[in-house]
Image 1 (cartoon, rainbow, N blue to C red):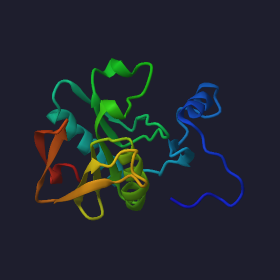
Image 2: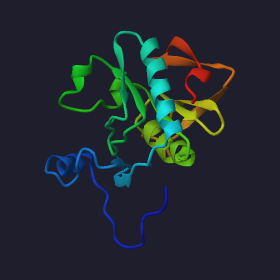
Image 3: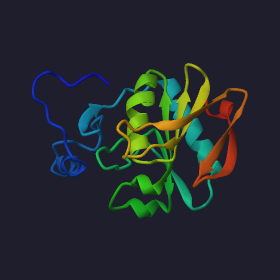
Image 4: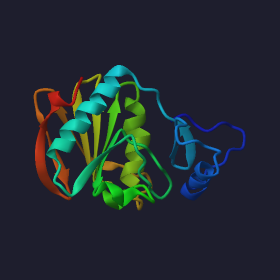
Length: 194
């Protein structure tokens, strides 16, 4: 993520961000998300990205236990951010989130699909998901045709939050779907890639 401009800038809290949406300063369909207090433009999507999102969401939905659901390109609220991951696997039921977005404690897995966003997903997004203690983070890496699985987050206590473990699964393999420390399914990597 580029450095902030040299002019004075201001970070926003999650509550302030919500108020801007509520009063209409930001619209629901504005292509922005709150990342570490900054209102950041979301990256545009291309056809391979959209296909990978659809494939991954379908594969995850088919493999999930009944108590979990998939949310596509919907917000997850953390203490200082409200990212909109390409997919979030959260505790169900669906109507549980009528009045608020899922928080980190509700989230078993976040998935970002990376075509042109690989650096941002490996750095900024990984850091904020690790700080929120989201236990598993996947990057569907389209250019390298693999799934990167990050686990063992440092949480908010670390000076620079990160995931301590990374395991890559190439197109010939299968990636484990782990929820609450237990493998509930394995999914073929080729089923997730366009």
